[in-house]
Image (cartoon, rainbow, N blue to C red; front, top):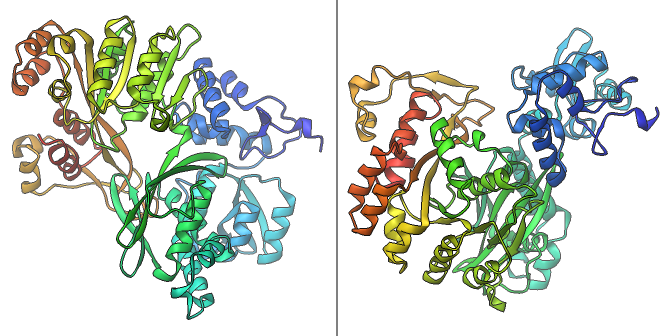
Length: 585
């Protein structure tokens, strides 16, 4: 078949599109013509695709612009097959057992069910004759192919062929091949072992497991008896495996090789990074090592490139909060801060704001440590303290670069805080992050850093305080009645509870029996008006500032969390963990 007839988006075949004889129009154009997306949405998705090299269809679904079913049904009609939604229809485990994992992964097909002498199979490319022949030879059954989206297929494969099982198999293989004298082997042997197949498979299985669970971090923690591996999933740490101490050095060396770190240095903290592609989705993994009493602890932060240009409407802002935040970042000057604990999504919010402002009319410059995502159109600068390029010195240079918008990765010290304030007072819009527990607490934090309250009142335009709460899994959600003690702990009166339909996840294969899948943002947006400025100048206590902010229609974090509970997005238990405990309210 002529390759020119294959459907492409920016030179790349779209998943699940197959090779229809008459299909030369690009997917984006066809969705646009069908009225399923707008030109603005298509442009935004293409910008994400240019940066991530992902599949356009998946990006459109991730951004919430179109459903996977809409794309699937459109493509299935072109191919003359039926589309199957693997989120709705679960493959029969007995049918899946008919094919070994290597065949399922190599053919990119998973059995759905067996009916007589027929096996129905979901495929990313239902016109792949070689794959169909392979399945027929292994099962002896006539194959009927269905179309499915490749990202749904990967999720289904990972669920039925558990990555944790591959981790266990790799560990068993390593233990069987490890000689008795291995505990005393030298550093050279450990480094050599890092490139051997069993260790490579073990580390790969750990990365695959983390991605399948949608983990945000992987912790490799040396313990007395071995290397404990834990994943942070939806804000909570889950233990995944314990690697024998005999293999700890080899695994550590393998990770350091992948992340371009010095494998011979184990006494000093190091940083590194790597890129990892998982079936069309590109992730950045940022590594940090620190020596402990039992060895080097390494944490891998997983950064999803496709999520960086997420529109503000998809982050969880309530409508009024979003409009107030957009108004803040569209101002020509002033300082807007995003605050919250580590891992609360501050960087994602700032990058979404950058995406809103990123056009040819603005000079946007960023100071980051490290640069987490590379975004076309931004002038991004990496901090390097060893050569004197700090947040403060970088800001001093930036103001001579004719910037319109300056993003400072984090305000950590007095000099950076004072420089950021000065930059905002000289006609620039300054965006940054700060570690505080609440929006009004930011004012005291800036004062503690040595910024004069008069300058705070003049420079500060607004503050966004945020948290991330685990989202109830929609695939296994059920209504329930929380314990009265839990309700009282989060401040929900029993009379009010009677009017709320509470939801929780009972646990299913999609959420890996956790009851939660993904996270939802909780925000409070403080707009600094004249009343707030007067209170700042007279050093009013936080309680008074909070009251004034709420009088100016600021929704507190607790109220935002309660709104999410009422909407069935999260649970009172999660609300208590994230807002009342972490937020200190």
